[in-house]
Length: 98
Image (tube, rainbow, N blue to C red; front, side):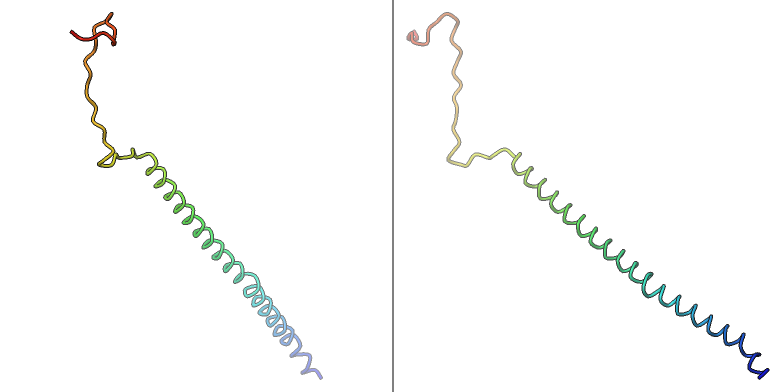
């Protein structure tokens, strides 16, 4: 019977170490790993959203640039203007020139 009591502290140590290993296992696989997965997913989603936002900004800038460009006249739409000399003051446009 005395030999049995000699092994009791050793058994408690073994049980305690086993329980601590179990807690460590639970901590790692139920808390640490899911948190790291969640943070990596959040980072990738944020990166995607930033890329989409940048693409939208580029598209808006391109659309604004197209709107701000002056419209070029087509070949048949060009009207040639002729310079008209200024009339001396005091003459009526209805009077015939001279």
